[in-house]
Length: 426
Picture 1 (cartoon, rainbow, N blue to C red):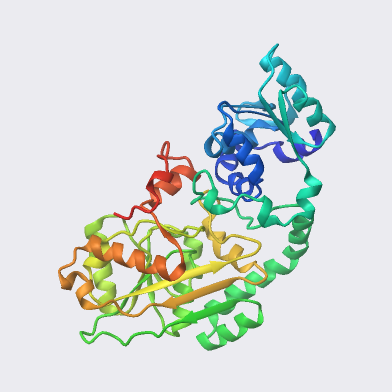
Picture 2 (cartoon, rainbow, N blue to C red; picture 1 turned 90 degrees about the vertical axis):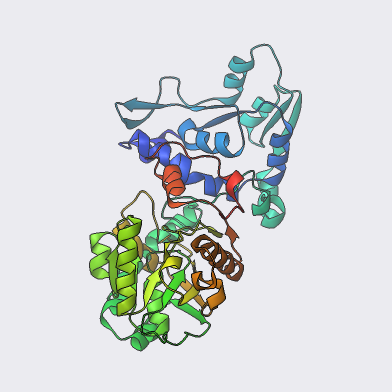
């Protein structure tokens, strides 16, 4: 344990580790939460967790998702704003000793632990004991012992980190063995996307393992000579690129935040917006007069099966609107980040052995459903959000880009409770 702690934490900043505990680890914990453990935990009035792992790794998840009142774990030694990699003077937490110190002469009503000797000593101090047998979990079907998503104590809409898999020793070894192949492969995939014609890109992309699924038909160009506005769900920075490749024609994409490197490498024209509604509206009107335009009204990416609130600006610009349901599937790396280097997002996505992109063109929006049909821009935006959610099997939320960065980057204060905002499009 001491060796693992040293390797993991030596030289790490306190704020970075706290961010991982808040934004990365909860996804893995929830996806491996035993349903019976959760039921027992939920039945208790006051909940205290004792663990030998560093407290900073688990406290955020336990407080936020399981409403644990107190977490006792191994404390780590720090110097200024950095971890040294050593444990504090108290050493590795011994559960039964920590429990005796915490309750003194009292006996807790319920004890919950594993079949290890240390946990047996721990739960023997409680009036009623429950044991989680790890061997039974391995031989049992995963679906019967793991808490299903619909029973999560609160929805997990946002999470960060690059790994799309649980980093078990074998899975992590496989990842490191793949990297010498995956990095050159990602560079090759990016290169062909920049330099070669659409049909050749699709052919070579399939040979390299990229799966592109296209549904629907591209509508004809509008009669007034202006371009068509494609309104997409936002999964990665590559959404406009894959849409352009699927349609076999050049598109212009507007974006709020794009790194200079991504802008240089983009095989299609990209234009930055300013977040000034008037100026952005004028920019998009000009671009529509020049050709077809792609916009992602969510303003940021979301990995989970949810759609964030749609900005209504696009609905005020044109009646030639085509909703496009975009979705991705990756097995090793996420092509999005909130706190890492955004210029590496396309590289990480392309490093996956078999990344998948689904593009479903839903057809041009009827005129009576646009602002020309006396609908407000908010009504149009909400209607398209619901239409895309239905096509993808996702859930609509009222969450925004600000909510995401408050939670994952922690740079704008405390985000309000998200669970109360699910299923509430404005």
